[in-house]
Image (tube, rainbow, N blue to C red; front, side, top):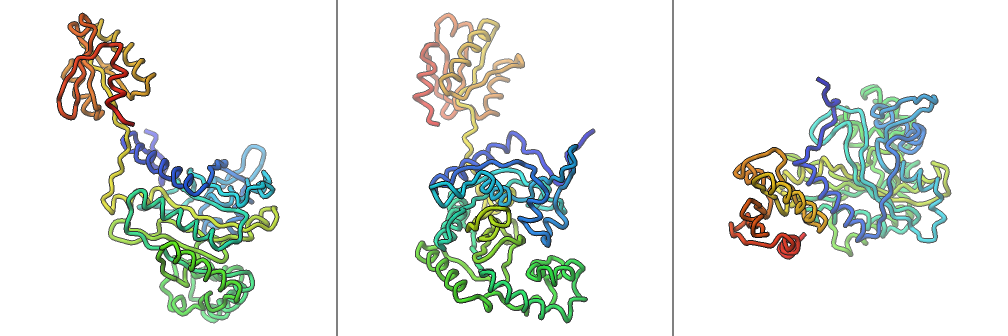
Length: 421
């Protein structure tokens, strides 16, 4: 028997309604903030992610699904969404759009080869947003507000926002030199990845999962101490905007995120996932990424979140989403002639926007009512010899058990008046 690949999963019909509800809330939230949807390819040039994500990151070094196609092109299943969005921004010259900043969002599958565990799969679904074309600190705060609004619209309450600044290029260089001086005397005690990153990108050492308990990690120089006056002022403006709109946060000078393109503001939103608190969403500013991918100097900021981790957080807080996938009406027919009439009425109901279905297995009436219960149908429309003779259906309200006779040509109007979608 052929089985599903490790690290992937099937979303079965009984669960897909929850996914649809989450995606609906994501789109509604983005509309409130005036973000428009963008859909990019699932695979892109490998070079896009090497340049965009950073060749010293775990994603590029260990986790990408790379392949060569029949034209000998090096391609990669996208491991994250920002690089693809920025590539599209540059390729379609959206930097020339008169409406700036360009505000975009996406929902779709991403792929990373890593050890599968709760909330971490090899194929996972991200919802993310990007704003390109503004250096205003207020839009950093807006991005954070968008993510928090989305979570709160779904009912999550156990949320914590964590902030840091990675500063401007001058700040980063000074901090880089300090990190090299700090780790270099004892770098032999660290893993081979950290040893390789010492000169290439020492900031990545702080994000190492193997050596996070090493004593030098706790005493590593903080980027906050190396911020230029300009970078410090920028971060203060972000915090002041968050204060003004009532969003609370904690500062964490060790927060660096796992992608090389970040500068200035970085943030994570933490939430309850089972007995632990883990990262639900993360993002920040990436002012140099557009030019790195061939476009003009353009500021950018964004975030991404995992739908899978969101589902765990919803379960942890005991939140059940109302999906609205229940049937409005189930048609129970008794006899061959009634079956024919049921087929006609079923089509009419559907054409009038009523979610309806009928039996296709030749069940007895009792079995048809059981099927209606399983579908959580609001009404059951019964048609038998008597109903055919009278030109009326027997409509049963499955909530209170009441029944009414309704003429066949009035059934659609009757149910539309009863049902609110």
